[in-house]
Length: 482
Image 1 (cartoon, rainbow, N blue to C red):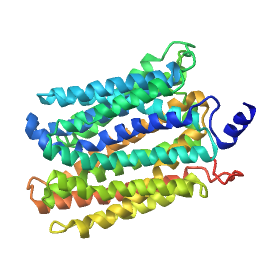
Image 2: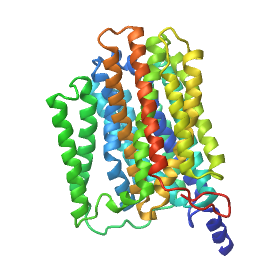
Image 3: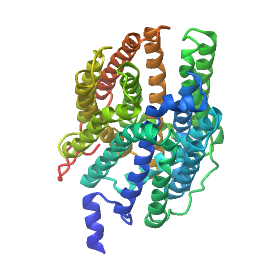
């Protein structure tokens, strides 16, 4: 027993953990959540016509999920830390599965939007709980690098399968199956987690939960995203937008004040954000999430609305992008033993920015081979190089009991960044397109959106250069500690 304990400490695996089962369960969860982020995109035109969505209303199929997911992740991370990561993950899996079933059975726009919002709530419980289980099971060393590399590869492969499956299912089985596809994965993850992961320790019940802080944080984040999303109908300088954003800022400021002064168990310890690594990784991920969401959106629409491809063809042509993310994630594992996570973020962000700038040269009379394949490979490999290092930096320097909160902050930052970035870049692209919706004008808008995404990624690289701390020493095993 003593030798086993020593071996676990040397490899960076937590004592008492079941690393294989935990990694499998977390991987299935992450694959499902990642797939759900992309599987719907290719089927949006068919969803809109099938349920009678308006052009503006259709965007809420995406934003209803992002708003609840991003807005509730802080609360999800805190609840996971307080009541047990396994318990919260099981609850999230059940809710996510039921919401997917209801979404597939939807007969009206409001029903599908409500189901997508419920999926977001389930994901807000799932994501921080699963990531905290991974972080606590593999706290350091080579095993941590390997585990997070597998996590990021699964994350990327879920997105790859999502775009391909979304196109095939929409074209040959009906859009409802982009929702039903989650059911077998939720069932598998439930079985793995229920029987394979060790029971949580007794729930920590010190102090009462900070309900007011949770309400302020969720409402402020959701209203901020809502205000930006509506700029397609209300310009940035309109009273409706200015008032909405002002209220969001007031709510978020009130949240910070409550967290600083509350005598209850705070939603997040503000000292966590004073950690330079945590703050820098979250700023990086805020920008990174917006840029990545813009690629999924603009390139998918370019393939269908400008080049005239079918949903199945668009899904297949988008596959090299997603596979490039998988390849980049795999390279991140290999290079993670030799290079510090900060350097990986700089390298990956630079490659991604160059790929996005190349996308900005897309043409209305272009082709997949000339205008999409090359920049897809360059940008996606860069993205893959960034995923695991960002997570490792954000969660590696915190106490184990705050791992759920730290992962909740990071996931929330990425989702809110995705919503804010997509809304802002979408508005920019729509302004360039104008009212004449022709392939040429659409192409101009999509190209401008991708160029703006490249600028956002350059800002992320600057954050990695000047905000994140320089690499620490290399361990005896060759793995860099964040």
